[in-house]
Amino acid sequence: MRIGVVFPQIEFGNDPLAIRDYAQTVEGLGYAHFLAYDHVLGADTSVRPGWSGPYSAANPFHEIFVLFGYLAGLTTKLELVSGVVILPQRQTALVAKQAVEIDVLSGGRMRLGVGVGWNEVEFEGLDKEFHNRGARSEEQIALMRALWTEPVITFEGQWEQVRDAGINPLPVQRPIPIWIGGYAEATLRRVGEIGDGWFPWREPNETMRAAIARIHDYAREAGRDPDAIGLEPQLNVGRGTPDDWHAFIAGWKDLGATHLCLGTMGNGFTSPGQHIAALTRAANELGVGWAAR
Image 1 (tube, helix red, strand yellow):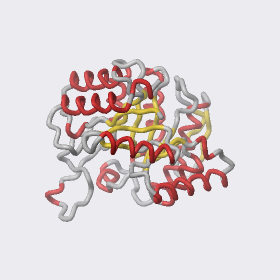
Image 2 (cartoon, rainbow, N blue to C red; image 1 turned 180 degrees about the vertical axis):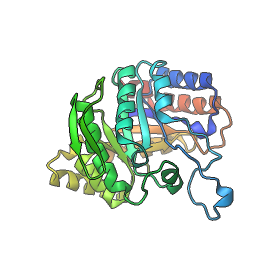
Image 3 (cartoon, one colour; image 1 turned 90 degrees about the vertical axis):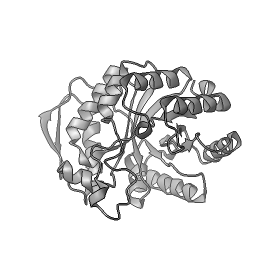
Image 4 (cartoon, rainbow, N blue to C red; image 1 turned 120 degrees about the vertical axis):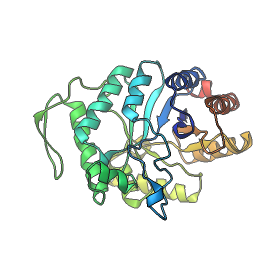
Protein backbone atom coordinates (compact mmCIF):
# COMPACT_ATOMS: atom_id res chain seq x y z
CA MET A 1 0.00 0.00 0.00
CA ARG A 2 1.47 3.33 -1.12
CA ILE A 3 0.82 6.08 1.44
CA GLY A 4 0.58 9.77 0.57
CA VAL A 5 -0.77 13.00 2.04
CA VAL A 6 -3.61 15.41 1.34
CA PHE A 7 -2.38 18.99 1.11
CA PRO A 8 -4.46 20.92 3.70
CA GLN A 9 -4.61 24.05 1.60
CA ILE A 10 -7.74 25.65 3.06
CA GLU A 11 -6.04 25.67 6.49
CA PHE A 12 -2.45 26.18 5.43
CA GLY A 13 -1.99 29.74 4.25
CA ASN A 14 -0.39 30.96 1.04
CA ASP A 15 3.29 31.36 1.90
CA PRO A 16 5.18 29.71 -0.99
CA LEU A 17 8.13 28.85 1.24
CA ALA A 18 5.82 27.10 3.72
CA ILE A 19 4.32 25.10 0.85
CA ARG A 20 7.83 24.19 -0.33
CA ASP A 21 8.85 23.13 3.17
CA TYR A 22 5.70 21.06 3.60
CA ALA A 23 6.22 19.15 0.34
CA GLN A 24 9.90 18.54 0.99
CA THR A 25 9.21 17.45 4.57
CA VAL A 26 6.57 14.89 3.65
CA GLU A 27 8.83 13.59 0.89
CA GLY A 28 11.64 13.26 3.42
CA LEU A 29 9.34 11.36 5.77
CA GLY A 30 8.84 8.77 3.05
CA TYR A 31 5.36 9.61 1.85
CA ALA A 32 4.79 8.45 -1.71
CA HIS A 33 2.46 11.12 -3.06
CA PHE A 34 1.04 14.61 -2.60
CA LEU A 35 -2.68 14.94 -3.31
CA ALA A 36 -4.42 18.30 -3.74
CA TYR A 37 -8.05 19.25 -4.27
CA ASP A 38 -9.25 21.43 -7.15
CA HIS A 39 -11.64 24.38 -7.16
CA VAL A 40 -11.44 27.40 -9.48
CA LEU A 41 -14.29 29.54 -8.12
CA GLY A 42 -15.81 29.78 -4.67
CA ALA A 43 -19.42 30.85 -4.19
CA ASP A 44 -20.42 33.86 -2.08
CA THR A 45 -22.72 32.18 0.43
CA SER A 46 -24.06 35.49 1.78
CA VAL A 47 -26.32 35.76 -1.27
CA ARG A 48 -27.12 32.03 -1.47
CA PRO A 49 -29.39 31.05 1.45
CA GLY A 50 -29.34 27.33 2.11
CA TRP A 51 -25.92 26.78 0.54
CA SER A 52 -24.90 23.19 1.28
CA GLY A 53 -21.53 22.85 -0.46
CA PRO A 54 -18.45 22.13 1.67
CA TYR A 55 -16.46 25.08 0.26
CA SER A 56 -17.13 28.71 -0.53
CA ALA A 57 -15.38 31.93 -1.54
CA ALA A 58 -13.88 32.00 1.97
CA ASN A 59 -11.74 28.90 1.27
CA PRO A 60 -8.41 29.36 -0.57
CA PHE A 61 -7.50 26.92 -3.35
CA HIS A 62 -4.29 27.06 -5.36
CA GLU A 63 -4.73 26.39 -9.07
CA ILE A 64 -3.79 22.77 -9.15
CA PHE A 65 -1.56 22.58 -12.24
CA VAL A 66 0.37 25.73 -11.31
CA LEU A 67 0.87 24.30 -7.82
CA PHE A 68 2.15 21.01 -9.25
CA GLY A 69 4.45 22.84 -11.65
CA TYR A 70 5.96 24.61 -8.63
CA LEU A 71 6.35 21.35 -6.71
CA ALA A 72 7.75 19.42 -9.67
CA GLY A 73 10.99 21.36 -9.37
CA LEU A 74 11.11 21.23 -5.57
CA THR A 75 10.69 17.47 -5.10
CA THR A 76 12.29 14.40 -6.62
CA LYS A 77 10.12 11.41 -5.67
CA LEU A 78 6.62 12.58 -4.71
CA GLU A 79 3.89 11.58 -7.11
CA LEU A 80 1.68 14.61 -7.79
CA VAL A 81 -1.99 13.66 -7.63
CA SER A 82 -5.05 15.76 -8.42
CA GLY A 83 -7.84 14.71 -6.13
CA VAL A 84 -9.78 15.60 -8.17
CA VAL A 85 -9.69 17.97 -11.15
CA ILE A 86 -13.25 18.93 -12.04
CA LEU A 87 -12.74 17.81 -15.61
CA PRO A 88 -15.98 18.84 -17.38
CA GLN A 89 -15.65 22.46 -16.30
CA ARG A 90 -12.29 22.72 -18.08
CA GLN A 91 -11.11 22.66 -21.70
CA THR A 92 -10.07 19.11 -22.43
CA ALA A 93 -7.07 19.69 -24.65
CA LEU A 94 -5.73 22.28 -22.20
CA VAL A 95 -6.06 19.86 -19.25
CA ALA A 96 -4.27 17.23 -21.32
CA LYS A 97 -1.47 19.71 -22.11
CA GLN A 98 -1.15 20.86 -18.49
CA ALA A 99 -1.01 17.29 -17.19
CA VAL A 100 1.67 16.45 -19.75
CA GLU A 101 3.73 19.45 -18.65
CA ILE A 102 3.60 18.31 -15.02
CA ASP A 103 4.53 14.78 -16.07
CA VAL A 104 7.49 15.99 -18.13
CA LEU A 105 8.77 18.49 -15.56
CA SER A 106 8.49 15.94 -12.73
CA GLY A 107 10.01 13.04 -14.65
CA GLY A 108 6.81 11.02 -14.84
CA ARG A 109 5.22 11.74 -11.46
CA MET A 110 1.75 12.94 -12.50
CA ARG A 111 -1.45 11.06 -11.62
CA LEU A 112 -4.59 12.76 -12.86
CA GLY A 113 -7.58 12.27 -10.60
CA VAL A 114 -10.78 13.55 -12.19
CA GLY A 115 -14.38 14.04 -11.14
CA VAL A 116 -17.56 15.66 -12.41
CA GLY A 117 -17.96 18.16 -9.56
CA TRP A 118 -20.93 19.43 -7.59
CA ASN A 119 -20.64 23.23 -7.69
CA GLU A 120 -22.83 24.64 -10.47
CA VAL A 121 -21.43 28.12 -9.72
CA GLU A 122 -18.05 27.06 -11.10
CA PHE A 123 -19.54 25.62 -14.27
CA GLU A 124 -21.46 28.83 -14.91
CA GLY A 125 -18.37 30.98 -14.35
CA LEU A 126 -16.26 28.79 -16.62
CA ASP A 127 -18.94 28.70 -19.33
CA LYS A 128 -19.47 24.93 -19.25
CA GLU A 129 -22.72 22.94 -19.15
CA PHE A 130 -23.43 21.44 -15.72
CA HIS A 131 -26.15 18.90 -16.45
CA ASN A 132 -24.33 16.72 -19.00
CA ARG A 133 -21.00 16.76 -17.19
CA GLY A 134 -20.82 13.01 -16.56
CA ALA A 135 -21.26 11.97 -20.17
CA ARG A 136 -18.89 14.69 -21.35
CA SER A 137 -16.21 13.54 -18.93
CA GLU A 138 -16.07 10.10 -20.55
CA GLU A 139 -15.43 11.66 -23.94
CA GLN A 140 -12.84 13.95 -22.37
CA ILE A 141 -10.95 10.98 -20.93
CA ALA A 142 -10.90 9.27 -24.31
CA LEU A 143 -9.58 12.43 -25.98
CA MET A 144 -6.85 12.98 -23.37
CA ARG A 145 -5.58 9.42 -23.71
CA ALA A 146 -5.43 9.80 -27.46
CA LEU A 147 -3.50 13.07 -27.12
CA TRP A 148 -1.07 11.48 -24.65
CA THR A 149 -0.19 8.48 -26.81
CA GLU A 150 -0.01 9.76 -30.39
CA PRO A 151 1.91 12.75 -31.78
CA VAL A 152 -0.98 13.76 -34.04
CA ILE A 153 -4.63 12.71 -33.80
CA THR A 154 -8.03 13.29 -35.32
CA PHE A 155 -10.83 12.96 -32.79
CA GLU A 156 -14.48 13.46 -33.70
CA GLY A 157 -16.70 13.23 -30.65
CA GLN A 158 -20.11 14.53 -29.70
CA TRP A 159 -18.60 17.47 -27.82
CA GLU A 160 -14.87 17.28 -28.57
CA GLN A 161 -13.13 17.69 -31.91
CA VAL A 162 -9.41 17.74 -32.65
CA ARG A 163 -8.39 17.55 -36.29
CA ASP A 164 -4.87 16.63 -37.34
CA ALA A 165 -3.21 18.10 -34.26
CA GLY A 166 -1.30 16.93 -31.21
CA ILE A 167 0.57 17.74 -28.03
CA ASN A 168 4.33 18.23 -28.03
CA PRO A 169 6.09 17.12 -25.91
CA LEU A 170 4.27 13.89 -25.14
CA PRO A 171 4.25 12.74 -21.50
CA VAL A 172 6.76 10.42 -19.86
CA GLN A 173 3.84 8.12 -18.96
CA ARG A 174 1.87 7.15 -22.05
CA PRO A 175 -0.85 7.48 -21.02
CA ILE A 176 -0.88 9.34 -17.70
CA PRO A 177 -2.93 7.35 -15.13
CA ILE A 178 -6.51 8.60 -14.70
CA TRP A 179 -8.25 7.96 -11.39
CA ILE A 180 -11.88 8.84 -10.76
CA GLY A 181 -13.71 10.22 -7.72
CA GLY A 182 -17.40 9.97 -6.84
CA TYR A 183 -20.02 7.51 -5.65
CA ALA A 184 -22.96 7.66 -8.08
CA GLU A 185 -23.73 4.47 -9.96
CA ALA A 186 -22.71 6.14 -13.22
CA THR A 187 -19.35 6.94 -11.62
CA LEU A 188 -18.83 3.35 -10.47
CA ARG A 189 -19.56 2.19 -14.01
CA ARG A 190 -17.11 4.78 -15.37
CA VAL A 191 -14.39 3.57 -13.00
CA GLY A 192 -14.94 -0.04 -14.00
CA GLU A 193 -15.02 0.64 -17.73
CA ILE A 194 -12.30 3.27 -18.18
CA GLY A 195 -10.67 4.24 -14.87
CA ASP A 196 -7.19 3.34 -13.67
CA GLY A 197 -8.31 3.78 -10.06
CA TRP A 198 -10.99 5.02 -7.68
CA PHE A 199 -10.92 7.36 -4.65
CA PRO A 200 -13.33 5.82 -2.07
CA TRP A 201 -12.94 8.33 0.76
CA ARG A 202 -15.18 6.54 3.24
CA GLU A 203 -14.96 3.97 5.98
CA PRO A 204 -14.22 0.35 4.99
CA ASN A 205 -17.68 -1.15 5.33
CA GLU A 206 -20.16 -3.32 3.49
CA THR A 207 -21.39 -0.37 1.43
CA MET A 208 -17.89 0.14 0.08
CA ARG A 209 -17.44 -3.61 -0.44
CA ALA A 210 -20.61 -3.64 -2.54
CA ALA A 211 -19.47 -0.58 -4.52
CA ILE A 212 -16.13 -2.25 -5.29
CA ALA A 213 -17.93 -5.41 -6.37
CA ARG A 214 -20.03 -3.37 -8.80
CA ILE A 215 -16.91 -1.68 -10.18
CA HIS A 216 -15.36 -5.09 -10.72
CA ASP A 217 -18.51 -6.34 -12.46
CA TYR A 218 -18.44 -3.33 -14.80
CA ALA A 219 -14.74 -3.98 -15.48
CA ARG A 220 -15.32 -7.61 -16.39
CA GLU A 221 -18.22 -6.65 -18.66
CA ALA A 222 -15.84 -4.24 -20.42
CA GLY A 223 -13.21 -6.96 -20.82
CA ARG A 224 -10.88 -5.45 -18.23
CA ASP A 225 -9.00 -7.00 -15.31
CA PRO A 226 -10.68 -5.76 -12.11
CA ASP A 227 -7.47 -6.23 -10.15
CA ALA A 228 -5.77 -3.60 -12.33
CA ILE A 229 -8.03 -0.87 -10.89
CA GLY A 230 -6.41 0.89 -7.93
CA LEU A 231 -8.21 1.97 -4.75
CA GLU A 232 -7.17 4.92 -2.58
CA PRO A 233 -9.13 5.62 0.62
CA GLN A 234 -8.43 8.63 2.83
CA LEU A 235 -7.70 8.57 6.57
CA ASN A 236 -7.67 11.65 8.80
CA VAL A 237 -4.69 11.30 11.15
CA GLY A 238 -5.38 14.54 12.97
CA ARG A 239 -7.96 12.65 15.01
CA GLY A 240 -8.47 9.20 16.45
CA THR A 241 -5.88 6.88 17.93
CA PRO A 242 -3.20 4.76 16.29
CA ASP A 243 -5.40 1.75 16.98
CA ASP A 244 -8.18 3.42 15.03
CA TRP A 245 -5.78 4.10 12.14
CA HIS A 246 -4.55 0.51 12.04
CA ALA A 247 -8.12 -0.80 12.07
CA PHE A 248 -9.05 1.52 9.20
CA ILE A 249 -6.04 0.42 7.17
CA ALA A 250 -6.67 -3.26 7.90
CA GLY A 251 -10.27 -2.87 6.78
CA TRP A 252 -9.26 -1.25 3.52
CA LYS A 253 -6.50 -3.78 2.88
CA ASP A 254 -9.18 -6.44 3.18
CA LEU A 255 -11.15 -4.57 0.50
CA GLY A 256 -8.12 -4.46 -1.79
CA ALA A 257 -6.82 -0.92 -1.32
CA THR A 258 -3.59 -0.23 -3.21
CA HIS A 259 -3.00 3.33 -1.96
CA LEU A 260 -3.87 5.44 1.08
CA CYS A 261 -3.84 9.21 1.58
CA LEU A 262 -3.56 10.76 5.02
CA GLY A 263 -5.46 13.97 5.72
CA THR A 264 -5.12 16.48 8.54
CA MET A 265 -7.83 19.06 7.83
CA GLY A 266 -10.83 19.73 10.04
CA ASN A 267 -9.07 19.30 13.36
CA GLY A 268 -8.64 22.90 14.45
CA PHE A 269 -5.02 23.21 13.33
CA THR A 270 -3.97 26.81 12.85
CA SER A 271 -0.40 26.52 11.52
CA PRO A 272 1.52 24.49 8.92
CA GLY A 273 3.62 23.06 11.74
CA GLN A 274 0.61 21.37 13.32
CA HIS A 275 -0.25 19.62 10.07
CA ILE A 276 3.36 18.49 9.65
CA ALA A 277 3.50 17.28 13.26
CA ALA A 278 0.41 15.13 12.73
CA LEU A 279 1.90 13.60 9.59
CA THR A 280 5.24 13.01 11.33
CA ARG A 281 3.49 11.16 14.13
CA ALA A 282 1.52 9.10 11.62
CA ALA A 283 4.65 8.30 9.60
CA ASN A 284 6.35 6.96 12.70
CA GLU A 285 3.30 4.99 13.80
CA LEU A 286 2.50 3.50 10.41
CA GLY A 287 6.04 2.91 9.18
CA VAL A 288 5.48 5.16 6.18
CA GLY A 289 9.08 5.24 4.99
CA TRP A 290 9.08 1.47 4.71
CA ALA A 291 5.57 1.30 3.22
CA ALA A 292 6.38 3.81 0.49
CA ARG A 293 9.39 1.89 -0.83
